Length: 340
Ligand code: 5GP
Ligand code: MN
Image (cartoon, rainbow, N blue to C red; front, side):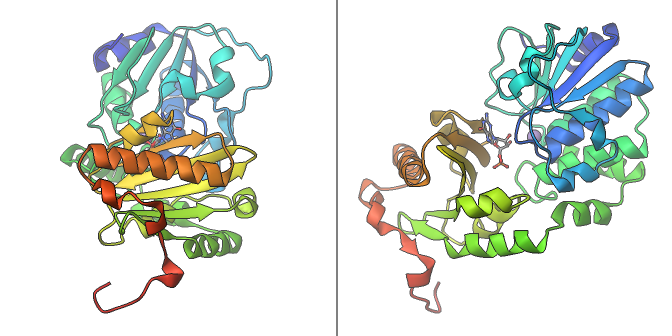
């Protein structure tokens, strides 16, 4: 059931023991929202537990009190008054779903979150779940400390590509300004989030070499092979390097994570990639979405390119005659001229 933000605040006020969680393959918004809520709810006397059923990459562990986030163990059970699910619908929280029978309060900004048999506050126009959490804390009369501000700012900055993407609104920037007032140093957060190991840089170099154009350059794709996927701390930011290519409406990153487990990230300049991701069992936003394809890399590549091509034809972004797989152009073979 969809509820309002004051109603969401009321659910929190009425609960004493609260479990916080967010999506698997956590990003800055997921971890930032959990930790900001952790500080806030603790400050108003709640007993709070934080769980995310996945590893959290190194850059995000630099957020204050990140060590409070635990991974649930098999069969773990906790009695609580409320399970707050942040930045995803409750179907992407892994084992956390099984650790409690508490009622769910879901707070999210994904347009693909259609809710279910639980309380949902969803605001697709919010750039990040952290932007919603800021308003929720105002409803709860919680003072935004520097620690809370750092977590919220990190979530907002990472979900907006440091305030570059189309989801950046006046509200996003007003909120960010308040967070800087509260003590955030934007340069420090940027440095923390952009930090890479030398190995990650080499992985990025290898991935860049795989970049290909499809459908006469309307789609651009990059591939991360298993051996790099296993050692990279993160592929965050890789896709931003290719989405800038002129003429490419859709950019994708396909990562061969494990046996029959490939992850897809997509970005677009207008094509609704959340619709493509949804057809493949994932979701996200119009211009940034993702999914998992449980196939090997070659099969996953075919499935993904077909899904992108078919959707783009249906929506008039692509002519059927452009839908030819042999039109992929390896950057290596790409004839360089003044015009391209
Ligand atoms: P990213 O490419 O940065 O991993 O994800 C882009 C957006 O798509 C994020 O908002 C993320 O939450 C969403 N997303 C990525 N993968 C999935 C998925 O497998 N399922 C759903 N529902 N959303 C996803
Ligand atoms: Mn988010």
